[in-house]
Image (cartoon, rainbow, N blue to C red):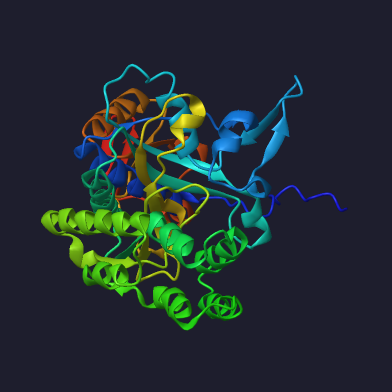
Length: 398
């Protein structure tokens, strides 16, 4: 194996140059301000966690985790999401705080499998967790906030798709009782949007015509609130019907928020079915060909940390949003260049301080360092809004 060159970096990570960093920070500030306006308080958790706690509780599969050993031989992980670490904090340091908890975050996360897939192994997420409220209103709140957050980030055109894990679990239990492996296989195909494979597997199950139509009917369940009525005609399973009622109520709240135009119901959505317990959703931007937001209800997670409370939330894929925006960092006012010699230095530095106190950017430079002839002036052209020269008792603005 060849030794990496000094300028190389590991596959799957990247450098953010100044313009991209400004864009990322603008998105972070705008989105976190939006979340704050909805009553969500910021929280930060460690980059490194114990594998036996946060690593196991995470929605990220084991093969996607970056693992390392500390000097005591304990297995650690780089955080792969923020939901599990926040669940740990909510179950310990925030245990005595009144519910519901509304928490927001922005942080980098790490997933090893992304490197193999040609994607990023390190990327940024901005999101919220709403802990201690199991109502449809809570699910609707996080969807409405996700929509507001995308708008705050600068995404103009987008659509959100809502599903419910309970509907598919109930329908599969009814259509395929005591056939957990076949249920799992069908869910895997829905998870990966493999609708052709779903039909092929359903046809190979040896079901009667009515059962076959019930399963294949799932693939047509996309649209507005009326989809819940169509889905209700496919099943009599209590869990499935209860889940549809929950989605109807979420839709009604979103309509009252005035954002239902951005939402469709997609009952083929299942999210990570080992992790989510109720409503799941994804947000898609027209400018990009992949999801920029995902979330849902995960009522069993806090139980793993000794606190049995319901929870729901979402994460924006901030790095993807940055890549998809045409102008993530609006043009900022150029800094003022303050040149000085030894005699004019005190006055020059005082003026630079006044400019900065007034909110302007100022760069100071000793004129004697390079003479500042025509060649240097040409190099500085376009970098500064103006130049102030403090040489001796003279002050000149250019």
